[in-house]
Amino acid sequence: MPANARTAPAPRAAASDNPARHPQAPLALEPDEDLDHRSRAIGLAARWIRQGRRLDLQGLADELGISRATLFRHAGTRDRLLGEALWLNTYRTLQAASARAEAEHTPGSLRSVGTGRWMNALVSRSTALRRQIDDEPALTIKVLTDPAGLVQPRVVAFVEAVLRRDMAEGYRPVIEAGDLAYALVRLGESFLYADVLADRPPDVAVANRLQQALLEATRP
Image 1: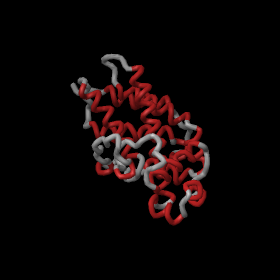
Image 2: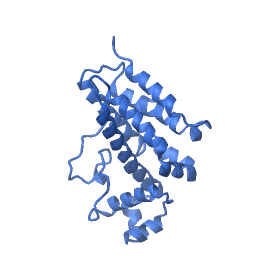
Image 3: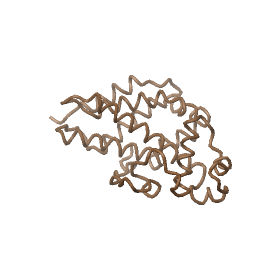
Image 4: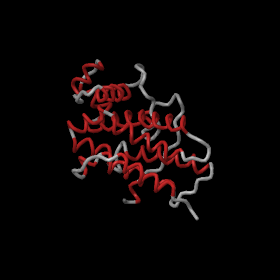
């Protein structure tokens, strides 16, 4: 895995910040209607994906009440909008995984293990994501796993933040937190999207075991 593929986590945005202007920051779950065209377009595109609908720029523009040219000017190409929409849905999943792991957390256990396990479970159970992958496998996997794209670097930053919470409580990983986060994310992708990446069945159980083994290796 290339070291230069990682991006440093960005500072957390203030609650009033517009996530479209802070692309590396956690996004609001649903953009408000009075936000700019880009934020509204991303929110609507994310909703369409959750509903199992294929992204159509003209249809999105019509529902937003703007022209297709205006949509393109504010939200960019279809691939760009797909990336932002997939990130918004991914962030919802990350937040849900983190909340469930926190509810199960016991003193001395690693939040990273529980959060990763819930991330894998929620991603593997997402019928909306699976439909998107089935409809456009090559494009969707490229958008989700591109180290320089809109989704993977943000997932890595999120995982690194969870790792650093564990480190603040005494956890000492064998490698630097950013590198470990990247490895964990890549491992998850390899097994969750194995049917597209390697023509083999996805295997959540193996992903969980390998990620836990990496996490539980500590400095001597």
